[in-house]
Image (cartoon, rainbow, N blue to C red; front, top):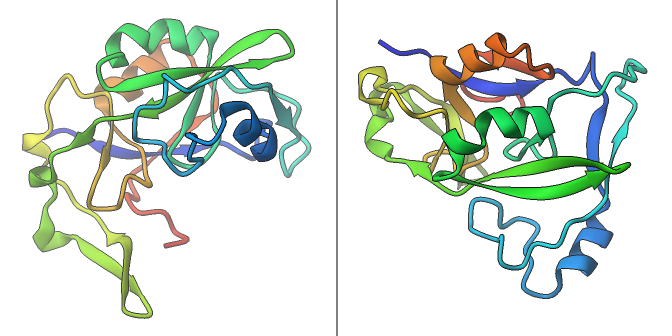
Length: 190
């Protein structure tokens, strides 16, 4: 049986990645949808400038892997070099520049088949009668492909990034900073 983790980001010990939404929308043009991550967008992408803000604890350490939105990881050049060949079929690496350094938004464009969702042990979340993603999420671990590194599901509308042991082991092997791996598969704010 394989383990599944929800990627979380260590926002206490590391600075937070940021983009100026107005600059991003202006730079990309009318075809850009800021909520369109998960859909291909390399054809319209133009490299914006990003920045790192102090963490809530005042940390000035910059992580190797950060996030822009919860479902959009950000890789520094080292993380990109490690994962590009392994993820290039499932993701776009959208370049961002921060003070002359290359970073990449990881736009996961492949969703895992919902057949791996254990629907008997999962539960949809409803707010005012409207379905709003997953309240509880479980997987058929034996059906998750070994080669899968990062994935999203339609069950929670692609709002969460998941990984298996292979991705976690590579992060640990290369001592990449910034990530936490949670066995709590649904974010607490849901």
